[in-house]
Picture 1 (cartoon, helix red, strand yellow):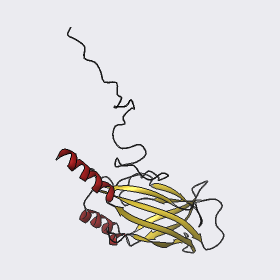
Picture 2: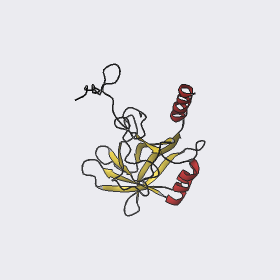
Picture 3: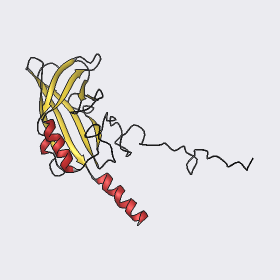
Picture 4: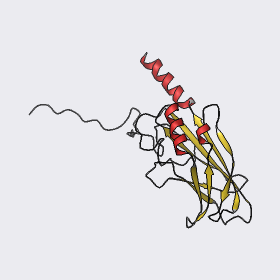
Length: 193
């Protein structure tokens, strides 16, 4: 029997354990903002490959037209072609703790993303009650095909009940994030080149 080779301990330099794959709680391997909800998918769903940029979705606050339901509301964001249950964000009323965000890794180029958003047409957000996830209403966003680095999408969008009554408005912002990846690419080029 030959000499035994020592096995790696699994510790990174400095003694900490290294995680394989993406950073904990995020997709795409880059740290998100504190309190950011982990995305349920990347864009377009089921497309594989490296993240080319991120699309941050920030929701809230909710401006209710009548009496607000007790507690915060939940908003489910499910992309066209997504096979999971969607990303659920907790939003409240105006004043302080009313916003939530999630960041979706984009695994295609700008033209392919624009084609996906155009083909999708409308993104529906489902507004639900917090304790029991009962549907309160829906928000429809039709402006996403106009999204570009110089043109984020944002504003207050109407929440309609199942009977088409206006329940209120939800603030929604979709903004592409390119800076993080650009800086990472530049650092890699400096190290390797």
